[in-house]
Image (tube, rainbow, N blue to C red; front, side, top):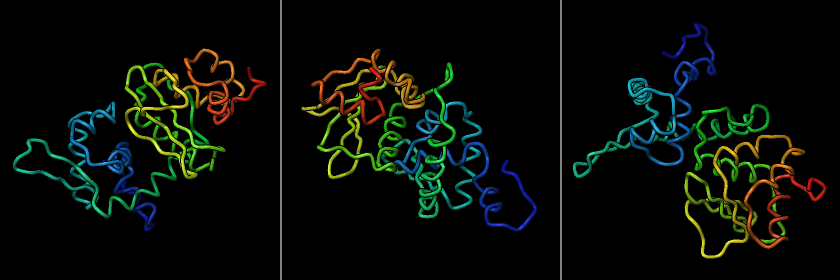
Length: 219
């Protein structure tokens, strides 16, 4: 149950509504798209079905989440209301703070979801205004997890699931190794990059690695 702080403050009141362990993570996942109950269980790895049910009920009562069901479909889908979508800048700010001050390599057994990892990568590159001199299309082949395309075009980074007909660089990697590569100190990324399976023309591979802070002197 969310805490009651017993003093009058909008921050305290907001935390009374969404300050429990799971609410903001559920909102994070629903900001991407509507989700089924099983989807939300998948992304919040340690939550129990009962806890998820209780949390969704509280978010519905607060007007943050609503159910979407149709007679022709057996599943119930959950989506954010306009009130819930107003959490977008809050979640983005938490993500930016976490990337800057709280990131570490994943712990043994800690789940790394490929779609969240690559989405965070694109968001971070856009937030830091990391630009290239030319358009680029990079295929990140997660084993396991499938293919994701990270592209730079018109001064923006974007990502979508699946591969393109033509790519400049292909990286085959586990989700855990990708998260580790991004979280370790830059001086350690050079040696790690030499153990990664990267394919592409040498100048495009160099461009890829430079984007993530790996310079020639790193090897």
